[in-house]
Image (cartoon, rainbow, N blue to C red):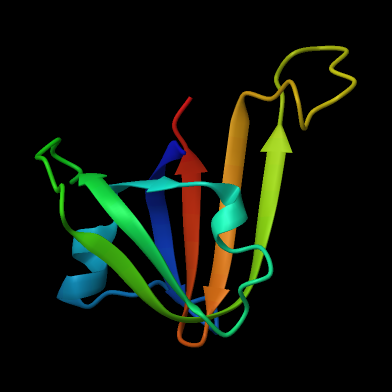
Length: 109
C-alpha cells in the first residue's frame, strides 16, 4: 500500500467543502492501494490515516466515506520519451466519487 495525501474534497457540484470536518482532512496522509475501490461501487471507502498535515501520528484512525460511485486514476511522467506511463510515472492522482463528495488524493512518491 502506498501513501496518499488528501488534496481536495468537493461536493458533487465541484464546490470545495468548507466545513470544519472536511477542512481538517485536507493534507492528511492515508494508506491506500488503488485496488481498494475497484469493483466496490456502493460500498464505503475505509482508509487508515497515517498522519495529519502537521506530521502528527494518526494510527488507529480512519477516513470513512459515504458509498462510492466511481474512481479514476491519472498517472503522468515528467520523463521525456516515457513509453509506459503506468509503469514509469512520477505523479499519480486518484479521484474517488462518493454519494456526497469528490475526494482527490495525490500519491507521495
